[in-house]
Amino acid sequence: MAVKNRFADFHDEITAWRRDFHEHPEILFDTVRTGRIVAEKLREFGCDEVVEGLAQTGVVGVIKGKSNASGKVIGLRADMDALPIHEQTGVEYASKTAGAMHACGHDGHTAMLLGAAKYLAETRNFDGDVVVIFQPAEEGGGGGKVMCDEGMMDRWGIQEVYGMHNWPGKPVGSFAIRPGAFFASADTFEIEFEGKGGHAAKPQDVVDTTVMASQAVLALQTIISRNADPVEQGVVSVTSFETSSKAFNVIPQRVTLRGTVRTMKNEIRDLAERRIAEVCQGVAATFGGTVSVTYERGYPVMVNSPEQTEFAADVARSVSGDCEEAPLVMGGEDFAFMLEERPGAYILVGNGDTAMVHHPEYNFNDEAIPAGCSWWAEIVEQRMPAS
Image 1 (cartoon, rainbow, N blue to C red):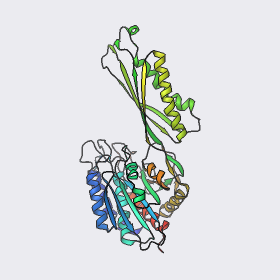
Image 2: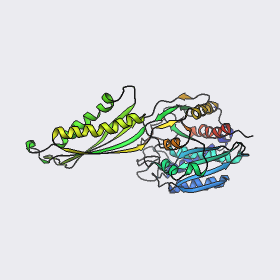
Image 3: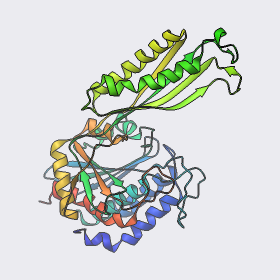
């Protein structure tokens, strides 16, 4: 693997940062400690500008190259937040915060981008500016959108932006990427059926919300299987079924369904939103009840720009010798908001034989650090070669 020797030299140092972040996970926008340490290190590295407080706890650092004849500005982004999961890895550096865990490897992403920032600030072997972005609240909070809404792209004149995510099941340090739609949109819905509650022994006197909601759960599965083109990707999942009564002998007045919708195209997203309401209204009318549907759009489809994806893949090949075509991912990723504002690309780096992300036994593989850091650094040095 053609990783940069400098990253091998301070692999242990970056690993120590990563494990410290792992021990002290912070959720959503509450990345106070993590952001403070990131800012301290960026200043220690000699970054030309360090700004804290974007999206509450986000941090941005600017590193200027030896020259700036090109006028180019590239953004590199890592996420910092953890998940509300109780860790079950048993590692010596396991989470010290009950109910919080770095179960998606954002500790590794932050450490790798810090390692790249240290190298770039030391060498400055590029022509242009690098903006390193440390973002809170990727896990459902939309921190990337908040940073964009606060004017980050225009403030630092970012022209292209690149992101990375570790991926369990791929060999350590290998890479995978795809152009176009890559990660799915991620929306949520809440459906409340209202009927007429009553004694379970007298169903003739009630309007049964459990029957209504049960029919709706089944009917909602037809949106993708019977309304969408079979070649398109989509998921409609009901994940919660909650009644207004817990008694064995009471038919509840209300039942609430909750769930998620994942799509790879806006047309399928629009279809799912419209049909969820239509299906539920039809079911409620059939059984003599009423229904209210709340549909919330979350992360948009994450779309890699063709030119930047090809470049990112070439860089990955220069680091590891290969770069596979990644599969479509039905999970959401709020880097999508940054790619809506600027061209760029998002790549996967192999995390080896570990539990999948969002699992209580997941752990970031520190052996992936040199490859990840090298990719960040090469993105800069190859995209903005020193004049």
